[in-house]
Length: 310
Image (cartoon, rainbow, N blue to C red):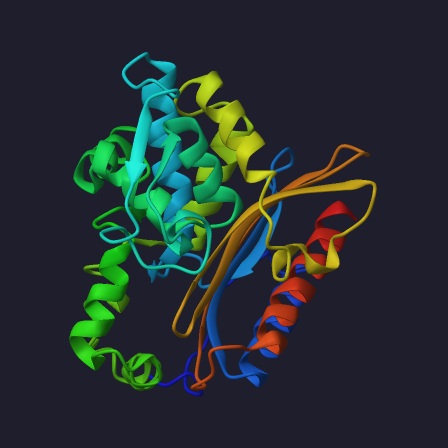
């Protein structure tokens, strides 16, 4: 189904919250963006959004559920956060930040791999953690916790391996294939197919954040540390871009790959409001940079937060 023919399924009742959800979806559609969005007040349960149950490849958003599984193993005494792990750039994962961008081997503790993975979205750090807690094991733990709308299936580097398998070293061709396939539903790049990718829905991701912020999943030590680490995210150009104030605190995680531009997170106000959000988008343009889409995601977050706080 083409983006032009798509009719979103809205969440937000029949009042002002629904109006905000419809306005956000219209703004995204005008930019050529197909996506899912959900914002939920963690204390009242009020929410607004659209297409919240549509599975989407997660890109680096998958690092959040991985981190929770690793942190739960640490809290249970099954994994030592001080355990040293050596990452060799010659054999590690592709990526522009952290250890993935290093030129020489480095030894880092497990606890600091978690920080690198969540603060600067370090793919090499993430895959070093996947080596300790394989995707299948992490996925099983998520099933046991009732996180049925989130699937972990592969290491981060598999994204690039599949893109290279389809387009060689031509990243622009991989982007063209991703955009073309979005309209047909047949994915040349396997890790863009929700049936084979690390995937999730906006509803499941917001549900995960709600349980983390309310200490209703894993162990309290694990959830507290995940909240702390997500508060160190460096990238604030999407959901947090219009939520910057001394009275607001943002904790989030972006995900970017080819035409995917995502973010999940929680905004907390000094006045007490706590709103969890998930924005999962796929663009229809062959562009590596799309600041207008990032800004539209930020505008959606601001509009949703203001509507939910009344």
